Length: 290
Image (tube, rainbow, N blue to C red; front, side):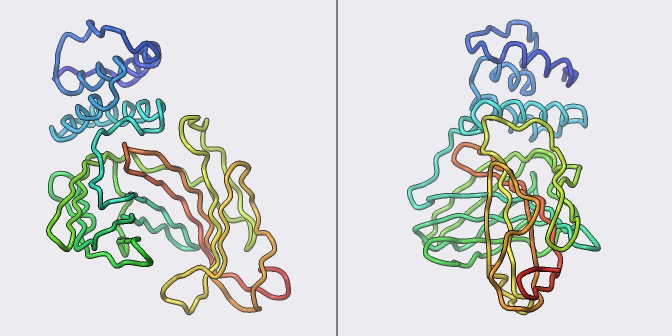
């Protein structure tokens, strides 16, 4: 399989992606990796995505994986990934999200993965498999309220890596929905860190993707003794992200504070979230935390 250097291919794509009618005749071979490039150049994101899936199934080399990751990132800039996947949810599946989170407390970083959504049918079981057969998640979800369902890992040894995954959802009456999911590499840099118990710093994370929603800062305060981890107070902010807590009306006591930055994109109808969170215990006395 011929290899296209990542830097060269990205320059090539950036130079002509804006011309949907371009004829990519300079591709002499038609293996799936070059087809993925060609279809993106021709403005067919869904066909390009299908070719990316086939390329990941073919056990790509390290160089080819880097090329596929760069190609996916470029494809998302068109419309934040909404045109990537032509797969439509069945009528009973209203929404679906793959959520990858890195939680940093005062002593360690804890990777986490969750599958959430809404369904008019009872969800019996969900599998999330790193292709071809590594089960990252396999569980029966509970309904939290109304039609909302959720499953999550208790703890992962490492962040879910870039590559191809298969999501399989089975309902209580025997229906099944399958979806291919391609994850990009997890962020290497932690770009939110504590300053003190009520303030934090947010590092610059490159240029924002104008096709996608702006990042959201999610602030949550929990009761340390509540094992359900239902927030006592929560606030989400987009646009200009704050770096300190506002005034919070809570009784004096010891709490758990979590602050996270949420980045979102799409894969067709599927929502993909990447979250970096920092957490710590805090004491609330009077009108402040410390």
